[in-house]
Length: 463
Ligand SMILES: Nc1ncnc2c1ncn2[C@@H]1O[C@H](COP(=O)(O)OP(=O)(O)OP(=O)(O)O)[C@@H](O)[C@H]1O
Image (cartoon, rainbow, N blue to C red; front, side, top):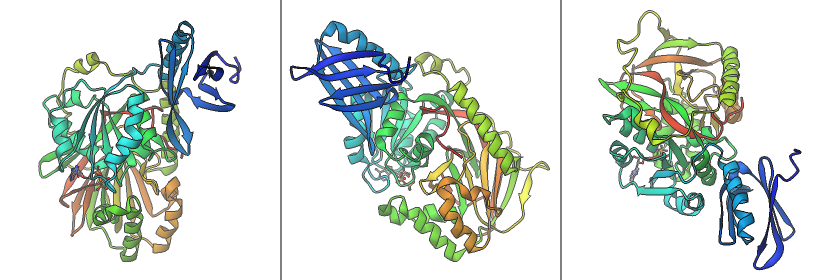
């Protein structure tokens, strides 16, 4: 059947005027014709359809710059409408179970402090339209989200953090403290971006819609569970979990040294970077690396091959209570490199401006720092920026939103199993955007330890 040809059509009336609304379901979209106006919406953006006693309601996210929720109400013959509506819901949801049960954790002071407002105006209406079952908590203090995760009943379909990336770090570390940590980490975590650092939402949804709360809500409603690697971060005998990044030197100064400028939103990171370029301060660190790959071109090829495989196989099936229960060993994995570096590790010998390790492509809208990273390749992407000419770094700013800095010779890019950093002077250390003591630590990757939600089955990046 040609894409333009309607697969099935529902003629409905609005306010008693026959023929005022025509809903046509095509192969991959819904066409709505009302009052001479045509709106075509991909089925992936249809969040609800129902027919009750001659009334039909269809809700979808329609692109109006951002994604906006639109509800179409109409009257029509109940017998004709019911099967049409049921078929539309089947086509719109595929394998995903509608009416997800969600734990929502909102940080009212995250980023520029607009979490509550954005939740109420832009996200909650989308979840309500999709008939999601919501259990909402507003955080009252630092650490609150971690405490919630530590004692959360495991009967939620997902945990959604309405904040920046820091709140997800707390949730995953709350899970890690539980005796049934492994089971808890099977509950997908997903972001609704209202913080200043929203790299996870950008990586899952892409640059175009990654900061749109409605698009993030859609990802929570329709995304399939996707394995998410975690990094264990061991310092002074204690192990934490990092889902996103660790940074030292200039990039940690950019994050932690600009906390007082939260009101600037995302712009604070660019300000911090420019300030760091003026001082060009060396990062005093001894860095040991358990390398998997160092060839940039080969890493791009592997990235493309892995990604097309992911598209073909999509992600794992939707969660059910049974497959969460099925996990027998619920403890977290042993560390493989607990004894520290051996002869297979290399040491980076040149003067360093910053070290940035990551598990996802976008750090912010201005920086595609890890363009060949994967949610679940079991490896950490490690960038070591040599202390180089200011001019090189200024040039990199312009190409950074598309990851162009990847090709700069002074920017060393490694795929690694693990690494260890030992401070040789004062500095900052940021783990998932949160401040950690600038003391010796070791990091290693753990394949697919946690879970997120994705509509694509891979990170949304073209490189
Ligand atoms: N009610 C609260 N009062 C104060 N701090 C809170 C509250 N709720 C959460 N926090 C803390 O706010 C911090 C910032 O959260 P998050 O990272 O999610 O947002 P953000 O604006 O992107 O911040 P950052 O840019 O610093 O990462 C976290 O350390 C979290 O523990």
